[in-house]
Length: 431
Image (cartoon, rainbow, N blue to C red; front, side, top):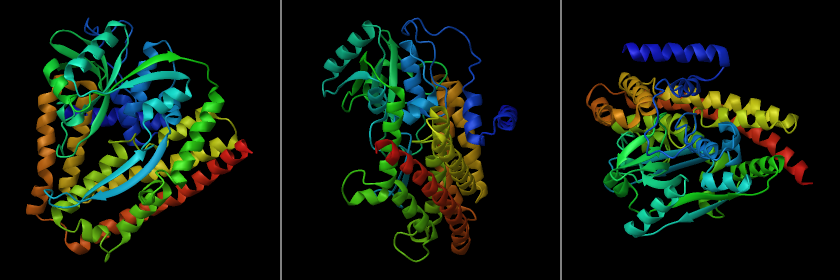
């Protein structure tokens, strides 16, 4: 409890000095490495920084490029990888008691690392194989050549993640930055390399053994790369993305679907119907929070980080105007996430556990796997505990949905204006 209060004090102090939203300031505070002991000897020479930052894919790429002696900010890389997006989707599974919901607030579905690297003039090699032996040989050859390897693992098999819903597949990119006979060392969110027993790594990597390496660098023009990335972001926010009916779930259209669903009290796709049972209500609200602040995103639905990218790019005044608008929309999304977890004491408990878990993942990683697993188990038990206690009545649940609907509608209004600003800029640059 004392450590948690200390963390909150440090975060609020940073907020005062930087103007950051709470969740962004928290990630920066956690990323300040205090354990300065040397990395394990098996880690590649020159790989000096792991974890940190606010957006895991951008941070991972920043660390990979730093190992090559190339320096870019997390915000610049986030923007070059496509920046922001929005996917709203609801799924029903036979063995799950209520529908599930996902929001992806970062650029999606274009793979982030290849997109950012391509715009920066880097070439990559991506291989997959069903053969564990072939995959192990490729990984060993990459490391022997002095290069890290980005491997796509099953996140549920990484003990320091403590996945609360392991029933859902979740491909997750990590950098393999060293290995010995028994252990593989990963750059995966923690400010220390995360060691994983080789047999556990092989089990987590077993599906396709996907491996990405950076093979070379060529010429590139940064302003051109920025304009191309912004145009792609605008295009995917306004559509189409995939070229078929599912495009309605992406971008501004996807945001509008979420807004409508939160405000719908009668329809089959409204949250009053989808998540009317108490445990489903709890699950949907905590999932909404996590998708806007923690998973497939940077804090504030990635909008504050994208605003930093636009401010750093500063190609003209429209970028500054759009940056201010996206910063405002990020505040709306963070406020919505906070509202979701303020609806019941059990949700507030989930919030406390989530913060403690994040602190351990970033500062301790594998060393705190047992504690992270215990926290995750308690988090997973909370929907049922809420339903068995004194849950909100249907009318009280609808009042919560009404408040969330208003906040989401406000965010959508700001985002439409921000996208219009960038769309005008992109059209002018192409004319």
